[in-house]
Amino acid sequence: MRHGLARLVLNHVRRTAITGGLETAHLLSRAGLLAEARGRGAIFTLHHVRPACKRAFAPNAHLEITPDFLEEAIVALRHAGYRFVAIEDLPMHLAAGDTQPVACFTLDDGYRNNLVHGLPVFERYAVPFTVFVTAGYVDRTHTLWWETLADWLSACGEIRFDFGQGEEEMAIACLSRKQAAFDRIAAHIHKTEEAGAIVALDRTAARDGIDALAITERLTMDEAGLRALLESPLASLGAHTVSHRALARLGDDEAKRELLISSERVEAIAGRRPLSFAYPYGFRPTVSARDCRLAADLGFAVAVTTEPGTLSSGANLHALPRISLNGYFQSTRYVSALASGIPFRFAVA
Image (cartoon, rainbow, N blue to C red):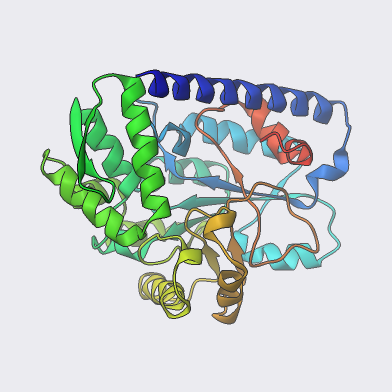
């Protein structure tokens, strides 16, 4: 109990520190200081776009924003002088001498709410956007382990899970223990053989009535949903691998197959090869220099990470930074602060 409560307190302290940093960045930006930090613009990362729903246990709350906040973010960026462009047009912008900053919107994993709730907002403001498609989610062959894990822990007061040395019983009746279990199992998935760990999670959760593939089907678009999305000229699809595993931990041949097959799957849906790619997870330990070379060799014009930062003319087009629109910080002040690039100068966000 003490460890779980300590973790909740630590997370609160971290969010408070980030909030303070964003407020400072907002004030510096308003004062016109460090204007050069904005660079040539920014790529924004989104996942879920859906109305707020109060849930007692929500370990993935950072991955969702409301349609209203998305609208507020677009309006704020437009007011700040940003031009909205599709991510595949970024190379042309970065190579040109245009000093007007650009903003790109990207949405990872292909959630259904991107079509239902996100598309109407983008259409209202004529903003292009790209959805990065995980082929295994479209074809219902792979599962979103973080969603499975959240549903499983929400439904149970105690669980049993095998961390590699036999099943361990975990009492998780209170929120702090649920969060501690989520963090521990997530760390296990990241540090072991990922595919096998996810299979083990799905199998174990199934004993308590959690159907991981049903969660995938409920939350993500199938081929018909993606085709409906593409009826909008503002929408485009990018590749996001087949299995959503960390590429840096895969062998050369397997990593190449993940990129190639996901590209071919998107082509089958969209009628053309995708020009953009998003690395699963996207932070440094999960993306290697080899992965960036693979993306370039396979013909992607751009590939994006989740390393935070703004764009520059000399940026590596196959390791571009993105700024997360985080569900914990849904304020237009913070959108402006992040887009300013100031927080990344001080490693605050």
